[in-house]
Length: 315
Length: 315
Image (cartoon, rainbow over all chains, first blue to last red):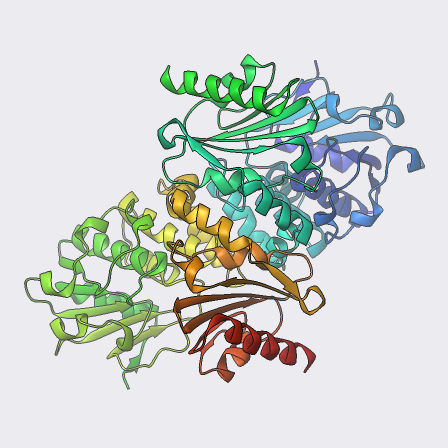
């Protein structure tokens, strides 16, 4: 267990560092990439050596962010550092970056309360996004918020809050966003870049919507993507939102075959604690967003999950 | 032509009024309803007589706003007023409200530069939403921003900016939103209420997506809804966004039959000035969002519009 620190100490820790490796979780999202790129841009502007190293493929819709092309896989990292900064996750989800940073002191900046608290210095706050925390650290450091810092930070705020729609959106999130717009961010540029979908994905949505069922007296809506259908679907990002918005629907569920007899389940709710439903099948998550994996074909998985949701709704 | 006024004078005009009729444009949207309800709630709290009167049906997805049920059609308005306040439009789009307010001085608060400037006192600013202007007037009046003021204002800000995604989103918009969250607004409540769709609408989207075509080397994507298909579609709100997000698409177009031989055309662009294309067919709008109506069947309308878009792209 490390030492819990606050904003001032986190800022001080970065001020003292001379060469840092900055990383985030595998399967990086807008907040992971935005927060690491923004901190890296600041550190470099402050005359330090800084690199973003992430041990995974990067989502293409973040390629518009300045610094994206310079993000390294661990094997390509060169040089030495005096601090590892882990953002938007804990020590458990950085994969190969742990190897190249072996022995370094670790500063962890995270907005997930589930953090394992294994880093040396741990700055955790319940915020909309890690980018909100990095914004406040940089403000504390009196950083000049240039566009190559502002654009990644805004992108993380926007994507982690579903463009300011989710319940995690706070007034501090909006005030940070306002300051970043003043620093030159154009909100439409961020939404157009991050929401761009290939024609194939839109055609996949089309096919997915054909499977829609609304059940349990209108309280549950689902999409059920069998193995054959999945062969023509590039990504299911955003599919569940298409049925989540139906009036009266509390629980939206997406079940997709990731192999012939393996189904991955995603659930979103407006009221029901879906993490409990996911827990029945060895999965987990948050009250309003959870998931699990079932080793069975689609018809069986669908039956099991829908029955479990209906039981929970009746409880 | 009336007198152009600024924030202070607009606030003073409201401070002096004792009984007001507050109205907005027909086909009212979130900003029209939000701005009028918020001002009405403030005026009543300040001990004045105030009524929102709008001469049209109201969108059901705004029914969660406090005061919605008390919005009147002109025929039901009783009493007398000393001021008509027109928000989010000018004197040309208030229909029957003009009759009941005949002879009253008119205060006009609008964020559309196309305003006809026929009111007595005209407060126009280029803002994201009329709600942003009403928020600033109420701040100027040192109003206590209660939830029944904050919720409608936030809803107008959010809906007129596509949840803070459009190019009209400013730092002042985000700061107003932050203050309204501090006043008790829950952003997820606003997004869930305003984005709720009936199952029929989602099934309509499904059918509409089947008509998708991507043309002009990927620069144009369209949905083409014939008369038969339209019989099963309740509303086409948001349909165009489904194709607008396709990578590489500059112009998204939706053509729908509103009668057997009448097609209504909506266009959204990321670069091309679609108001010029709409203008060729007697329509109009903004650079990035425009529309027109063609008195012909779908196949002909489609051919005409796509050719005009391609010509404009090549120009």
